[in-house]
Length: 289
Image 1: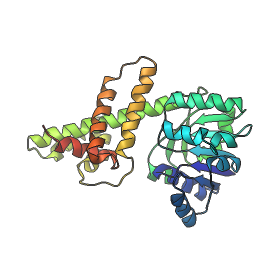
Image 2: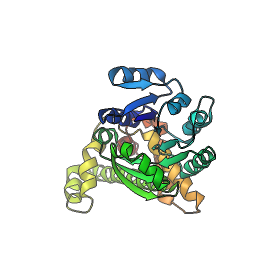
Image 3: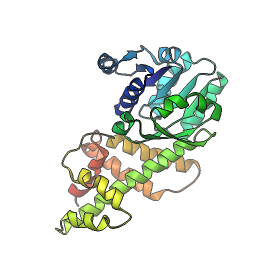
Image 4: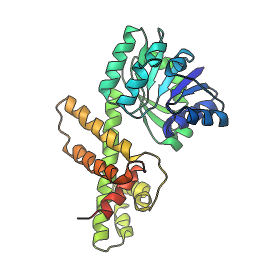
């Protein structure tokens, strides 16, 4: 089966390579063509000139790009996805977007007798390479079955509903919870340090409570002077803003998520935007009053 991957950031690249390893014929497109060509030379990938060509030459395409604006550009632009769509084509939205965008694009595709399936994922690039992602899926069940082979190669499928938008709401809810917890843990470490107490003590205590999985996974990462980028802090800002905007759509107040978004935006403005999102700890612990 020919599968397209549109967007070769950390996650898009990991997904493309995993699919190649599982025997799929993978074709890719990336805004920065040189990056796509470099990856293609090192692995068994074919590079397409435009999103339109990518869609025309594949059975289904996984889109993994940064935000709503970027998705709209590759979807609507000249030589974009929409110009290559044919009846029964399945476009997979694995990007973290707003559910409102998914609903909009699904409506447009239906007019062309094509389909959008939401399939946002939990897990980073390393998890993707091992095929151990958790994939939340929304969309027509019959069409989900048609791409099950592709998604199963990437991880465990959790079917949410046939309503487009539902899977993306759950993804944003999860990310908001995770990111907010990292900020709170960073503040906790900062409080302990401010009183000249060894942070290992709070780790020992938290390890005896329900917080054990969190402290064991993130303690060293938050205290490290540097950490390889798995998820950019700027994308954490975007996800928090999208969670806030999604809640706003239904008049649901989310004061903690909104506050966390503000703190992460401040950190991005201080130069941490392109670093790993765990660098929120450095921003909080070093930028005292």
